[in-house]
Length: 170
Image (cartoon, rainbow, N blue to C red; front, top):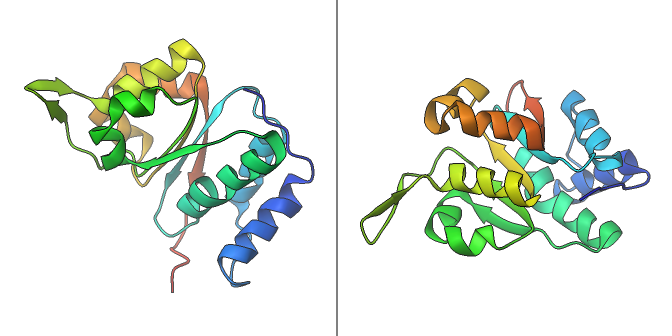
């Protein structure tokens, strides 16, 4: 699914200011989010890095509103534990936001062990689903948790953006 939002920088900044009650500040990594909003080339988004830098605000609150308003698309939003608990339901969705990937445990239902996120990444690649993901883990830590195949899939189907620097939470 291709996304193209006109005036993405102005609109993203308006969203940040709205949700932070005008206390937000523009960070360099937000320019990469703007590039993705301007033209994602059919790829999802993986925002990773330090906590308190706006990943969840942008990916979990602002982007779903923008995609609904400008693209008439609904983003199904989950945290990693919800994804784990309802994996089969999550996999049915087409645009999926998952917050805090890497914090979930192995999913065990009726004795069957499943690595939910690896399954979701596989499904997204095979069926052209759009994933929007946030994590505080590094790419190496994600690789350690999910394996090389899953990270290779993520590199193919998402744009990765590093959020680095000190937390903005006061």
